[in-house]
Length: 368
Image (cartoon, rainbow, N blue to C red; front, side, top):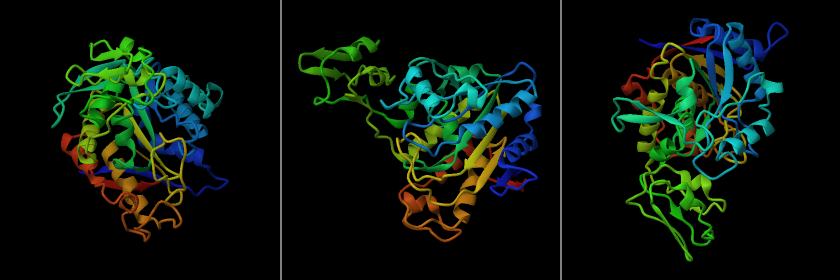
């Protein structure tokens, strides 16, 4: 049976602006049915890397917050720390970046709480019946929340073809070691050129996998458990992840993590995708290249698989923008994601998520 995906394009008038459309999308999707007075509602967003500008605008998130408050919910904005040593590698840095990008309480009307703790290690092992994992490490505050509203920027991604609701759930709601599980099968490595033998990674490792000598640090791959703490602790960015996992396997792992994120919240989760500023790469970069299609609109559903499928179809149905990272697929109906990343089969994440029972790729699009 197909799932319902509600869609609003970018057209507005004096009878209703885009903020009003966001409210209607949430109402039609059944927000009132799973938010009760006093419920703690996690609004999972991407805070955006410093220097990026394509992430969902804070003023749109404010309307999401206001809709939740209508029903007595207590919303908080949340994101997780990054696996790589960038501007958002721990809670202090990430929340500072969030405020600098406009997600301050005065703008959005809700507090900011990192879902995976101070250093990205706060997580709950959630049992699942996956093809790859029998349990996944989901950020603690996602688990603790009564309800979940995932607001995602739908755009291209170099490893998954596109990033939407499934990526926001699977990658964005996992702890640092969960991200390691998805991205890598190898222990981190230390750059001799950057390592100063300061010993910060040694103090961070609780598994005895690191040795520091005058020549620098070394990680024993046989003792490393892949928690990623050393990556975030190194002040010189000398410890790096080996991004070796194949894209096809990463997408399956990500789908299984997304499945674990919503377990127990199947009746209390809502997903919104903004098909705006469809950039050719992830919002984790410190820049955002020109959009490959024009702004299309906003979609909402209680089914993240149907939602992502609908958004992918809407992007592919649009004419592609020339003089961008898009190299083929310019005509309506042609594959825009393969036009940027020809080697990535983006359908794998949807197929695997559907196989897990997370949702269906079949949908009915209802225009608001």
